[in-house]
Length: 257
Image (cartoon, rainbow, N blue to C red; front, side):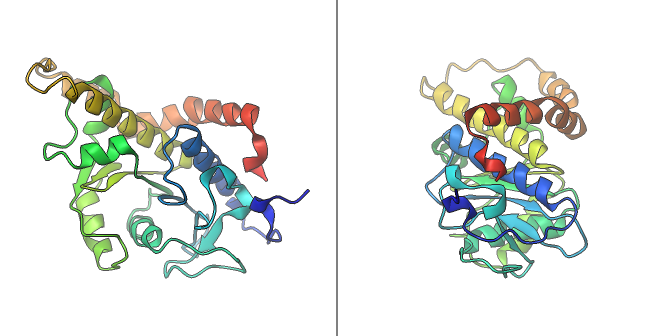
């Protein structure tokens, strides 16, 4: 039986594209499962293998829990759909995601959220504080980008890329959170740690900032070494992401359609 997520005919996919679609659809379902979605807003994307510089992004008219591998929209670096589609694409999603996909060879996946905890920390002038293990894991690999309004101005892409530098996560000030990864799994795990760190910080500060326990000198550097980007990627690919896919398969495997 056809579903809302599979109303379009299945096109011919390039090698590796279907696997990228399945992983990205899984990420959308996980975002919904963890309550990180924002109706149809925010966006996750994945690069399509090959030299054409195409990437996959969500149909703007679908909830995250509806998204399947075949319903994802393939677009080029100009934001134009590649192949027939009846679905629109979020212009702000194109601006943010195309910037990082084009500038970073390791940005095979880019994910951006507007969670309440992420937005709360993005509005704090001191940013992410190093007062929990999770924030230390996320914080040494994080960049910041000042708010410029809803991200529909293509000129912002250059500044976004410059602010990102070689980091793998970003707090978009007064806006939300963002992560990149050389795989969907690695990107999702980085975003998970950042979101958990933001949640913990909001809870922590609800008791007041004046009585926080500062971590011992040198421990932040130790955690940075222990959670280097390469190791985090291996942790995601070998352990966390396969486990998350099994979790989704038990709940609802329709993301694979």
